[in-house]
Length: 73
Image (cartoon, rainbow, N blue to C red; front, top):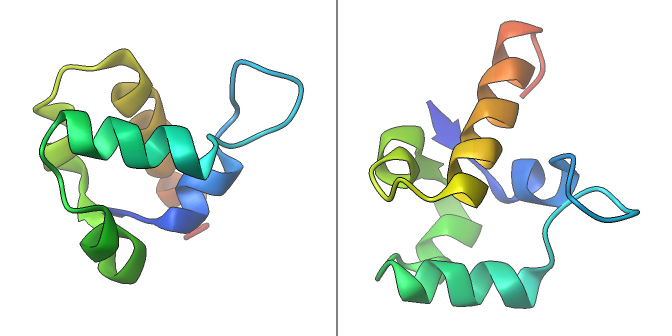
């Protein structure tokens, strides 16, 4: 399954608003040597994010999978 920018923008976050901020997400991608531009254009396989073991990434994947299970993106 592919995780998309739309998922990133809508994931229930830890602040008052949903979604993760783009700047923080870019930094997160850089930290794990993942291609931000490719993600924005095409999304990324959930397994790639899961392989990082990072809690924010795992939360994003769980949200995307939940959406898929409920017939959304």
